[in-house]
Image (cartoon, rainbow, N blue to C red; front, side, top):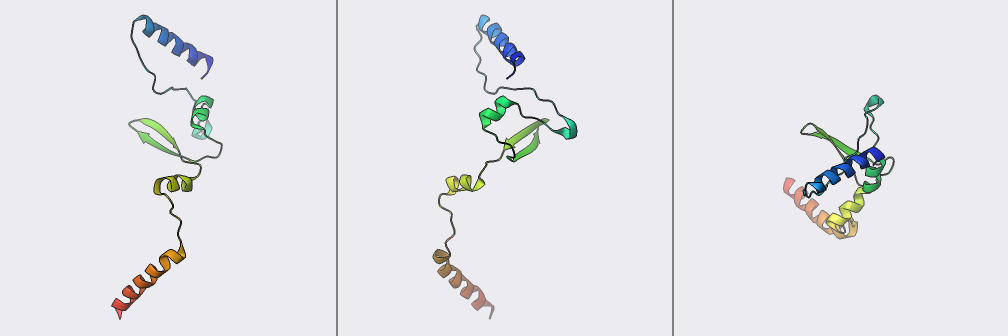
Length: 110
């Protein structure tokens, strides 16, 4: 966050604390400018917090009049493995089932 953003946040917190109002900031917003060809530079604070890297892919969508940018994982297979456990295909493991299925399907046609 730049100095101006920090000053605004600090002054807002001071005002609210003087009024005995307690707030918790869930999300920090930073301003960015839409450039040529509608490019957008993600502020450094957000990049660091989300551990984004150059070339990383992201989903972009519109929700209720707002632009939502959702970073995609660097290694989708790692996420899949964490979700499903060991999902590696083993030909030996499934060969017998495949042969039985093929015989059943092919046998029913003749």
